[in-house]
Length: 421
View 1 (cartoon, rainbow, N blue to C red):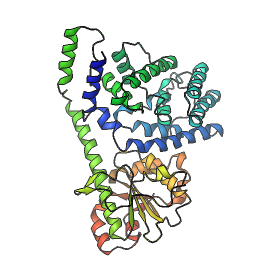
View 2 (view 1 turned 90 degrees about the horizontal axis):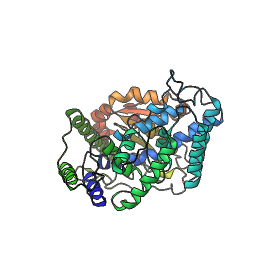
View 3 (view 1 turned 60 degrees about the vertical axis):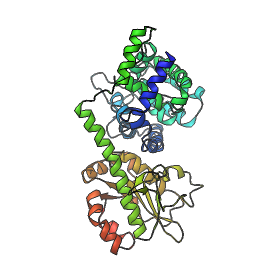
View 4 (view 1 turned 120 degrees about the horizontal axis):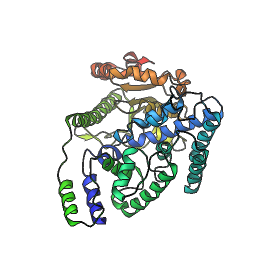
């Protein structure tokens, strides 16, 4: 059985359309961890202040869960468990203030503690509350707080785990989630060299098994069954036209993201600025060279900044050559969560090393302006109006970048083709 699972993992890791390549190694994935943590902190703060409200829609919880749901196919539908079902009055954390506080306490404990003992105790406490409709789907929040301790959770992951191990884990039960977690940790430890300390990797494997992209190895020693399974694994599974189109769109979107970063990099050079490329993007290929070629290799002045890790993930920063003060910041949001980009902008804007900051720009396709405005109307961003965040459409940048590079000075030309939102 061990050899069969090893074969499965090796085949899965090299599949460009499986979750390992398309999500776990996706460079945008790691950007969301800090912003989701900040979002969960907002939820806890509002519950403590008794200002969370009595509805999921337009709440801080909806904002952060929506950001998780945008994490490609593995988290698609993550918000279903939190949507209010009026017929059943679940999940009962909106109208019942005691349950709401218990939910907030769980999140608070998981924000403040990093040890397994505290996390498991907090889960057992919430389970004893028997809050109607509030089950292990909450683990998707906990995964982004503790990716090495808490595996993600959904129907496909449970189905994949049951198929791979022969277990009978049930949905909606915390004790079943905890039992599955123990089994996942054991599996992950056994195959760690092929997986990761981050439980998102094995979660992705189980998701692909549970969603029937891959078939789990036979649980018996039946040689004929094992041979048929190996033959099936060796074949390239044909995807339907809709799935193929969606995956192609994802790949095109990632390329477009790099292209826009390249435009902004070259435009920054032309206007006389030093340029910083997001730490996880600098080695991408652009016009036959590294995207980070000739850019800053370190971010001066941010060694002690409490939000330095988030700031280093901002797609493009322009800095004054003389004093290395940040002058402008750009977040390119083609298909990724606009919420996460805004959170990184807030980390930068409220830092102590931004004396010369003049412009914050969300750069996005023309058809995402409505989504940008909708995000900024959320209660979580009610204080952002003073920052004068600007929306820069792709079409304006494409049409005017060469002219600005030749004749422009400072940020005025960029401000002229963008608009305050």
